[in-house]
Length: 487
Ligand code: SF4
Ligand code: FE
Image (tube, rainbow, N blue to C red; front, side, top):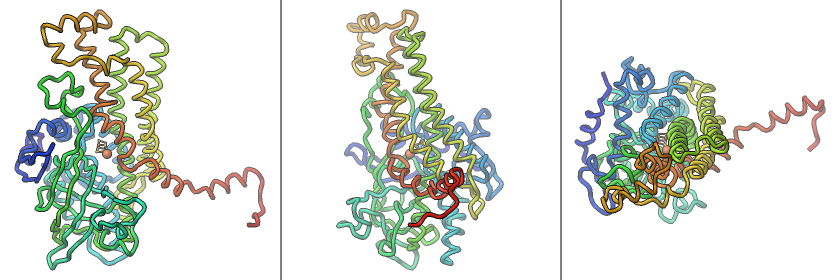
């Protein structure tokens, strides 16, 4: 059965030989690095829960390609129910990790590439779809984690790829050989890149004829020669290097983002899924973005559940859980969080099949979902900070709580409700700090803003999909306007 255990997943990563830099050092073994470990734990959980009978129905499914039981992260959505199950799976994993578990970008990329390559082949007589499906079968059989890589550095945002002073600001093909292509450039903000077996690269924007070299999609093993990983920092990340588990806030899990440099990487033809068909770059971007905007209606909601739980506990530990304004704020947080979930479910339920049978979310509703995600986690975080109180950012360290010279003072003066151990109160405040201001805020706040596209990207799509003319017709019919208007 092509389902790795968590142990097998970690062992398979250990065999890889990536060129990685973390905090200025070349790191041979990223698997055991303390800054990487929490993010690896989060991806590992996607493997672990696939073998847990309580969760297997969400985490696994039957492959539409082979009939085998596979991870849902490797699956092409075959129905609206599949899309709904995906959102539920992501909420569950958000609840279990309170972090970005990274594996969804690959799932979203394979679904976008699947339908787009088929349409490219129909229009251009190319053979990308069969190449992609062959690679996808291997992904499913090996239970790979795949980094769906879209975002280019972009340089001067006022210029197109080919207009840039430095042509490498967008990833491009720099050489064509008899056996494949050579690519150069970089992908930024790469979620879980160092925890991935493969990188599936897509263009970052709609392209024109002059940007033909930038219209490229392909997959490469994550330890291919020429790939260089530079690990991203997170607020308060050094706490992951400390001995205790209190100050880190999230004791076990975290996210990961890398800058990935493609320094003339060779890609054999069998792994090239788009090359030069610039007219489909926009479609690919639009679909990947829509799937990932749907994803946020699951994962961020799960993390929101943890934050709401932590805030409710903070109120209880402070002895104020009975106050009406506290109850109202928790209700507001829940209302906002469930609204995000409703959007995630809605765009899934309204999903439709593409020409390959792979289901695509409703694009308008997926963009509305993500637009809300750019806002609501900020308000949920504000309310969490409101209820947590200032101690969240002024309390001493775990070391002070352990030092016999200071422990009695902290135990005495940082006690809240008398039935709650002081350490429990401090642990909950550190978790809220992690999610709203610390390393966890990368995934819960800023990623909510910019991940899967910044707010304006969704507004452009909403404007395009709103079909105002259709709404005008509705209004005319209701108002009794029957004659056409002269321009
Ligand atoms: Fe998955 Fe959410 Fe992380 Fe994206 S942000 S990779 S959807 S957990
Ligand atoms: Fe993301």
